[in-house]
Image (tube, rainbow, N blue to C red; front, top):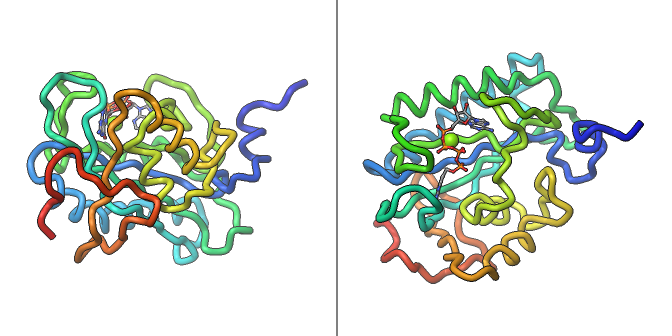
Length: 225
Ligand code: A4P
Ligand code: MG
C-alpha cells in the first residue's frame, strides 16, 4: 500500500513536519498598526497551543519574516495594497517533535483574533482588516470545508512565498519539491506577477529585507517607519 501524504510529510526531510506556519495579511484600516499589534498576540497563541499539546513552549522559536507590501491577488478590482508577513514556529531543538497539536482549536483562535481586529467576511478574496491563514501545522494533512492543511494555495502566492523565502530561502514548503526561494523566482517569472516588496525593519518588527529580496516598490513609497 502506498504511503499517505501525511506519512510522506512525516517522513519528509524538509523540516516543516516539526513546525507550524501562519500567514498574516491586511489591506483595510491601518495594516501596519494591526500587524504590529497582532504579532505578540500570535506568539502567545502559538505558545499556548504548544503547551496545550503537552509540549514545552519555552523551547519554541518564532521566526518572523520582514513585512512585505504586496499587490492584491484576486478579489474585486481597485483594492488597496496589502501588508503581508509569515510566522514560522518550530522547536529550538530541531530533533524535538511538534506532534499532538490541535489545528482546529488554533484556527478558532486565529479567527477570534481576526474578528477582534474588525474582520468582516463579505466576498471571497475581498479586502480585509486582518487575515490569518494556517499554512501548515506539523505533519497534519486534512481537506475539510472548515480546515485545509497544508493551505491549498500556499505555493501559488507570492505574498506567502516571499516571506517564507525571507525567513529561510532553503525551506521546502509542504507539498513542494523545491525550496521557497526558487519557487518564488519561478512564480515571479510568470507574466503579470508583481514582486512583493520587503519593507525596512522598524520598532516592533525588526526583520530586514534580505539581499535577494526585490527592492523596487511598484505600489508607492514604503510605509513610514
Ligand atoms: N479555511 C480552510 N483552511 C484554512 C486554513 N488553513 N487557514 C477556511 C485559514 N482558514 C482556512 O477563509 C475562508 C474559510 O477558509 C474559513 O471559513 C476557514 O474555515 P477566509 O479567511 O474567510 O477567506 P479568505 O482568506 O478570503 O480565503 P482563502 O481561501 O484563505 O484565501 P487565500 O487564497 O488565502 O487568499 N492578495 C494579497 N496581496 N495578500 C493577501 O494576503 N489574501 C487573499 C486571500 C487574496 N489576495 C491577497 C491576499
Ligand atoms: Mg483567510
